[in-house]
Length: 89
Image 1 (tube, rainbow, N blue to C red):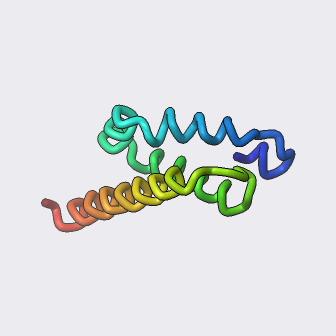
Image 2: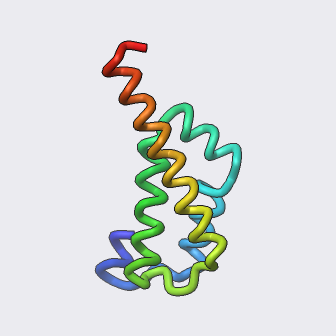
């Protein structure tokens, strides 16, 4: 992402591959949700930002919809964890 923001060297297929491998894969989603939901949130955030900034020029609407859905679900998981830490449950 950082390289593309400064040098415009990342092609759309690279963003798509990252999305499929790290965000859309159910096994990876489960792994991230259990071990590091912050990383999953960061990855989805960067991918959505790349699309918003048109660095990822042509993501499908379905891909963007899934990214948003996973991002919101991850946010809910993080909020729930935070609430449990605060209340001690």
